[in-house]
Amino acid sequence: MAPDPVQAGDDEAMSAAGPSQGAKAPSGGSEDTEVPSVGALIERYLEHVRVEKRLAQRTVELYALDLQKLSDFAAQVPVALTHVQNAHIRRWVAQMHSGGRSGRGIALILSGWRGFYAWLGREGRVASNPVQDVRSPKAAKPLPKALSVDDAVQLAAFRNDEANPWLEARDAAMVELLYSSGLRVAELTGLDVAASAAARGWIDLPSAEAHVLGKGSKRRSVPVGREALTALSRWLTLRAQMGVPAEQTALFIGRNGTRLTAQSIWQRLKRRSQQAGLATPVHPHMLRHSFASHVLQSSSDLRAVQELLGHANISTTQVYTRLDFQHLAKAYDAAHPRARNKGPSKP
Image (cartoon, rainbow, N blue to C red; front, side, top):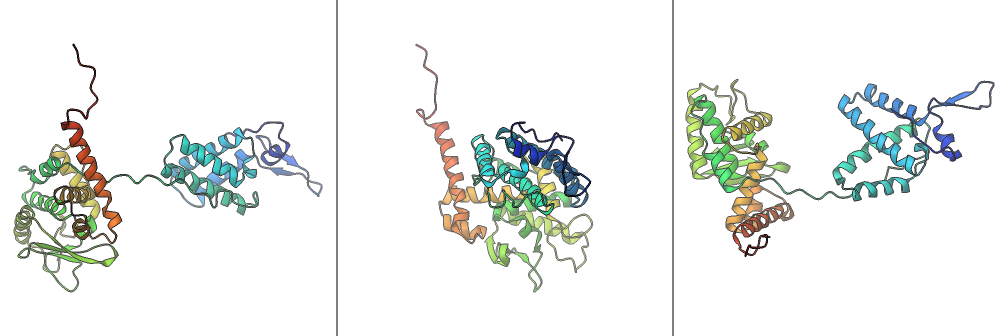
């Protein structure tokens, strides 16, 4: 990496940064002590995170880019990296933010800078960490991604007649249950066929309910829709015919007879959504978002949606009101004759 460019007129910066190949600083003894350039310090730091911290090569490359950005900012002042102050960091954060960089992106850059200065402190190169109490601007919370009603129904109704019958029945039941009841993927994987003292969750077909263990070890019961009940009954029939050992209580199992993992469900759902012809790959939480958004659009009952999702605070659920408004705004733009910007009409 290129050394930190510093103007020749800045004696203090030159003393701290040194020339590109390292300078000879006089010492009290008969021998001179070599002062590493800033570029050399950065290289040593990158070697430290690569070898001692054993970070992935891609992470090291990102650190290098972040430190190059730090060097570029410092060169514009100019100030040596070892003389950067808290006010410099705050100014550069403001510049990045006004330039359109996201709060999350700035947070990642600051994390890299903070680690670099912490290492310089341990090396005795700086007295304090100028990044220590600097925080990135708050990032706007993105809206959850939900399917349209038509896309959700298209996915739920999809059937693959060429697939293995028991795999098809299992995957169809998972999709129906996720969309019917708004379950988290961890809640889905935790379901057992029947209630027991050890069960984290289970399906009660006669009552049309799913009993799940949610975040914070909080239990809740959610209704299961008619189509989901039909799909679950079909899957349970095939599951029983597979000769699954009695000790395997998991509702959804894989080819090897063990409980499905969250990763497996993500992969199966992504593949199924593509087979169903959806433009966007679907993940389990997207079906949870779709469930919440569609129930809210139909009922306008925010408290009910909060209970169904198992949210501790209503503020967590309120994000779906923004989705609901977004849906209404699109419908308005598409339907109202005075909503859309149209070109001048021809005489």
